[in-house]
Amino acid sequence: FGFVATCRSTFVMAARKQIMSITQRAAGRIKHLMSQQQDPNKIGVRVGLRKRGCNGLSYTMNYADKAEIKKFDEVVEDHDVSVVVDSKAVMFLIGTEMDYVSNDLTEEFVFNNPNKKAECGCGQSFTV
Image (cartoon, rainbow, N blue to C red; front, side, top):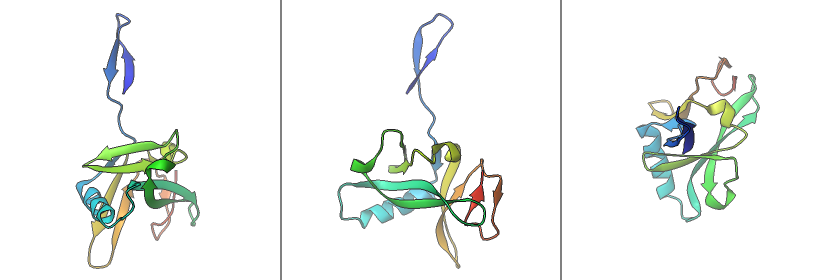
């Protein structure tokens, strides 16, 4: 929660918007993956960015351990799942939608990122 000043200088609690959203499909897949985890310290998945690929940045995903959540990481909770956004990736992922697609050829998490300026031909890296 954040504070919003009103014209009378009183403060009202305002809900803070989450960094990214998670679709029902992505949440369903995360729930499935978490149901196979035996480690009770794993609370969800961690999303970050890494410099690589022909366009600069690519997404990373790992299991999130509650003891490894850092001070400036953002924890997104939606559809009963938790996604920890690495603090170094927050500014690049604001407004991003995390989805999961499955078809005859592939199954993967997809990030619909409004900040992306360009993407490589294979879709594995992007520029902001």
